[in-house]
Length: 145
Image: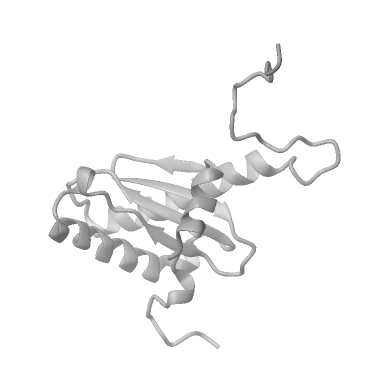
């Protein structure tokens, strides 16, 4: 049976700092001129979303709240088109507001791109002999030399 509720329930939101940190530390992101989307697999059946709307990049409270309302609506309307089982953190990058259709398309596209990137980067982590990606990429283990 189809869910009749069109709300954005608390179970689909990232709220705790630890939930946001878990997504940010995995470093799987995709961006365009308006948005950056970070993604990490959550182990849940649903897709959850958290918002980080910076005063420095976006502006005053009215502008920040406008971005948040539009992003929540884009998520709510398109949650069936987003990758399942992922936590998403969305950061607007521009004071200009794109048309709603472009915002929806961008959110869907970036979420899928970040999810593919996460899967590619973590594919060998669970396999025998596969090395899990290190947060300090590019560093050589020269400690003690």
